[in-house]
Amino acid sequence: MSYADLQKEFKVAETFEPVFQLSSQSRYALFSLVIAVLLISMALVSAYSKKGFLIRLAIFAALSAAGSMFSGIGVVFLANSLGVYV
Image (cartoon, rainbow, N blue to C red; front, side, top):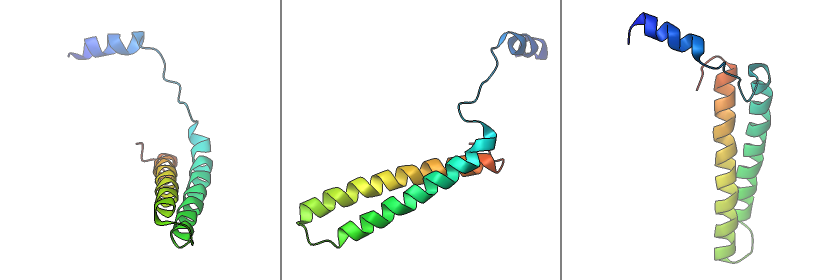
Protein backbone atom coordinates (compact mmCIF):
# COMPACT_ATOMS: atom_id res chain seq x y z
CA MET A 1 0.00 0.00 0.00
CA SER A 2 1.45 3.34 -1.01
CA TYR A 3 1.53 6.40 1.20
CA ALA A 4 -1.12 8.15 -0.92
CA ASP A 5 -3.52 5.22 -0.50
CA LEU A 6 -2.85 5.18 3.21
CA GLN A 7 -3.49 8.93 3.44
CA LYS A 8 -6.82 8.54 1.58
CA GLU A 9 -7.89 5.72 3.86
CA PHE A 10 -6.97 7.78 6.92
CA LYS A 11 -9.09 10.72 5.76
CA VAL A 12 -12.23 8.65 5.11
CA ALA A 13 -11.97 6.53 8.27
CA GLU A 14 -14.29 7.34 11.13
CA THR A 15 -12.77 8.79 14.28
CA PHE A 16 -11.94 6.48 17.15
CA GLU A 17 -13.87 6.99 20.37
CA PRO A 18 -12.50 5.01 23.32
CA VAL A 19 -14.97 3.15 25.52
CA PHE A 20 -13.06 4.07 28.69
CA GLN A 21 -11.33 7.43 28.92
CA LEU A 22 -7.60 7.17 29.57
CA SER A 23 -7.79 9.50 32.58
CA SER A 24 -10.24 7.20 34.41
CA GLN A 25 -8.51 3.88 33.68
CA SER A 26 -6.26 4.08 36.74
CA ARG A 27 -9.36 4.32 38.94
CA TYR A 28 -10.90 1.30 37.21
CA ALA A 29 -7.62 -0.58 37.68
CA LEU A 30 -7.62 0.13 41.41
CA PHE A 31 -11.24 -0.96 41.86
CA SER A 32 -10.88 -4.14 39.83
CA LEU A 33 -7.64 -5.18 41.54
CA VAL A 34 -9.17 -4.65 44.99
CA ILE A 35 -12.18 -6.74 43.96
CA ALA A 36 -9.80 -9.42 42.60
CA VAL A 37 -7.90 -9.62 45.89
CA LEU A 38 -11.17 -9.87 47.82
CA LEU A 39 -12.55 -12.62 45.57
CA ILE A 40 -9.34 -14.66 45.67
CA SER A 41 -9.19 -14.27 49.46
CA MET A 42 -12.79 -15.46 49.71
CA ALA A 43 -11.88 -18.43 47.51
CA LEU A 44 -9.06 -19.39 49.86
CA VAL A 45 -11.33 -19.08 52.89
CA SER A 46 -13.99 -21.21 51.20
CA ALA A 47 -11.44 -23.95 50.53
CA TYR A 48 -11.04 -24.49 54.28
CA SER A 49 -14.74 -24.46 55.17
CA LYS A 50 -16.54 -27.42 56.74
CA LYS A 51 -18.88 -28.06 53.78
CA GLY A 52 -18.75 -31.06 51.47
CA PHE A 53 -15.93 -31.44 48.98
CA LEU A 54 -18.00 -30.81 45.84
CA ILE A 55 -19.60 -27.69 47.31
CA ARG A 56 -16.20 -26.36 48.38
CA LEU A 57 -14.78 -27.12 44.94
CA ALA A 58 -17.64 -25.36 43.14
CA ILE A 59 -17.43 -22.27 45.36
CA PHE A 60 -13.64 -22.18 45.09
CA ALA A 61 -13.71 -22.54 41.30
CA ALA A 62 -16.35 -19.83 40.85
CA LEU A 63 -14.64 -17.34 43.17
CA SER A 64 -11.17 -17.97 41.78
CA ALA A 65 -12.41 -17.65 38.19
CA ALA A 66 -14.13 -14.35 38.97
CA GLY A 67 -11.03 -13.16 40.83
CA SER A 68 -8.82 -14.07 37.90
CA MET A 69 -11.07 -12.20 35.48
CA PHE A 70 -11.02 -9.07 37.63
CA SER A 71 -7.25 -9.41 37.98
CA GLY A 72 -6.81 -9.57 34.21
CA ILE A 73 -9.09 -6.58 33.66
CA GLY A 74 -7.21 -4.65 36.34
CA VAL A 75 -3.83 -5.40 34.79
CA VAL A 76 -5.02 -4.20 31.38
CA PHE A 77 -6.42 -0.98 32.85
CA LEU A 78 -3.24 -0.43 34.86
CA ALA A 79 -1.02 -1.00 31.83
CA ASN A 80 -3.11 1.40 29.74
CA SER A 81 -3.02 4.08 32.43
CA LEU A 82 0.77 3.81 32.61
CA GLY A 83 1.14 4.26 28.86
CA VAL A 84 1.58 0.67 27.72
CA TYR A 85 -1.42 0.27 25.45
CA VAL A 86 -2.84 -3.26 25.37
